[in-house]
Length: 93
Length: 93
DNA sequence: GCAACCTGTAACGCATTAGGTTACGGTGCG
DNA sequence: CGCACCGTAACCTAATGCGTTACAGGTTGC
Image (cartoon, rainbow over all chains, first blue to last red; front, top):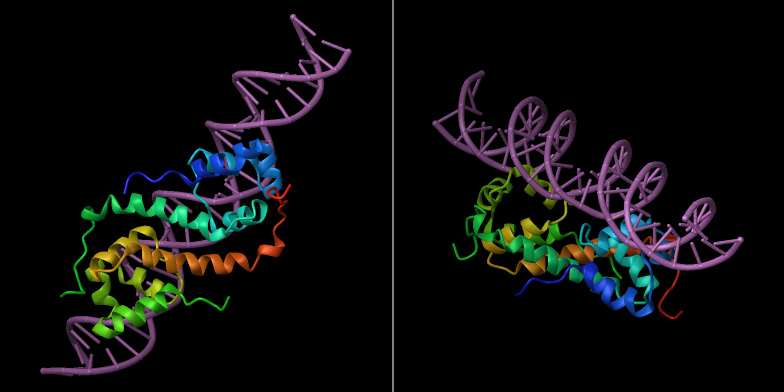
C-alpha cells in the first residue's frame, strides 16, 4: 500500500538501462517521438493502451502488465481522495 | 480474444438492475451527474479511476476490479491495431 | 578551441475524452 | 391538461497523450 512507482521508473530500470538504451533509440524503436518517451520516464505521462502494445512488441512482454502497473499507480492516487468523495452506499443499504 | 463486454454493461447488469436502480438514483448516490452515468452505461465513457473509487464505495466492491474490466476493454481495442504499429523489436536483439 | 552532431527536455498546438450544465422528448399521475 | 420524473443529446471546459519545433548540455573530429 506504499507509494507505487511510476511505470516510467520501472520501464527505465527494467528495459532501458539493462540494454543501455537511450531515450532517442527507444523512441525510434517504438515509433514515437522522443518527447513521448521522455515524458513517460519522468512520470509526466502515463502508459496509454496503445503505448502498452508498443512496449509489448519491442520488449516482448505482456501489454497487460504495463497497463496493470499504470492501473495500480492511478488507483493509488485516486484512493487518496476517497474520503473527500460524496458517495452514498447502495450495497448494504 | 472474444469481444470483452463494456464495463458499463457489467455495471448495469450486476449493480443497477438487481437493485432496480435508475440512472438518476445511481448518479445521485455516486455524487455525479446523470449524464456521466448514462454515458458509462451506453459505452460512451470508460470507467475513470475516480469513478472506480466511487463505485467501490457505493457498491462495496473493489475499485480495482472495475478498472481491470476497463483495462481489458481498452487493451482489446488497442490490440486490434497491433499490426498497424511501426515498432522495432528490442528484446531478442 | 570550435564546429557539427546527438541527447534529453521544455514550449506550443492538436485531438481525444471525462465531467458538468442545460435543454429536449417521453412517460406516468394528479 | 399540467406536472414531475426519467434518460439522453448538445454544448462547454479541463486534462492529457502525442507530434513538431526549439533549446541547453555534452561528445567527437578537425
